[in-house]
Image (cartoon, rainbow, N blue to C red; front, side):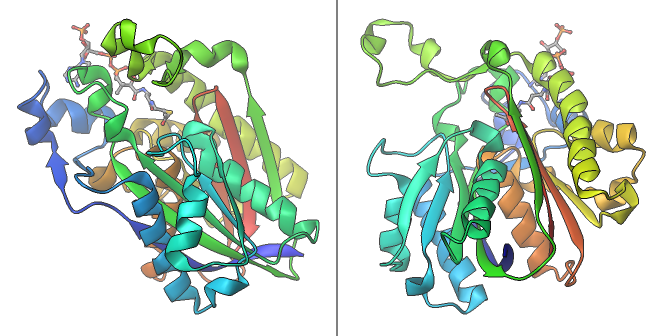
Length: 319
Ligand code: ACO
């Protein structure tokens, strides 16, 4: 059995900040941000929370799939910015959508989180443990960034995306995942709940990032893991219809496509509208492509994510 996507949904907050709005807060400008990242604007929460956005994305996925929420066996939420440590966001989503028979838990692997949660769901389904799994990526990065640090605050936005997987017969899903804890310091967000944090420099509790280090890592590891999955699946790059990558920076996606010698036509990008929403980028993009009618049954789709840890993961599946 494999998990086939039977519904997708996404939610972004209505409040928008474009690059010109950011230029009023930090020393930056629209041209620099667009040229270096491909980002034009980002949606930012006001009253909303990570669990709220996850719940709204889930409701839209349920509506599209036409399934009864009571059929859902499991809810996985990939997030590193839930407004509560517990209850987990997945249990909040369960309440929102009335998935009374599901078990829910959260999974934190920063920006790689959704692809790892998707792989986890596929493993539960192929083991026969679950039939219907809701997989969500949701993050409020605006709550984690230092809005005076132009090196990071320009990159991120808030949002959530959801997919529902149902067990069906089909070609096996192929996946790979890695982490390199030695490179952890390249991208960190300290917990505000650790002992004594309130006595430390406030700035320490925001995202710290070695931008160029993360950039080089992503450009090398994303093509590598895509090749690794293709080798396992005994397929070629030409067999893949879409490469749906974590949306962190347009230049990273272009560099990965160039290394693989694949046209950018097969690497959809929506950074202009949403910026980097961390675990939410891949499912938001999947939902957009799905609602635009871009997917056909049997098409092969490669997901690839990378982020803090450092972690990176990929999954090849059929629509
Ligand atoms: N506006 C204007 N100038 C800026 C800004 C800004 N927002 N930020 C930096 N600069 C300046 C720097 O101070 C520097 O000036 P200098 O030459 O006078 O010293 C110059 O621009 C170049 O800075 P770099 O850091 O070298 O710029 P770079 O081309 O590396 O782009 C960026 C920076 C966009 C952060 C890039 O490194 C990047 O995207 N890295 C990957 C980051 C990423 O994807 N992180 C998230 C991935 S994982 C996850 O999603 C959690």
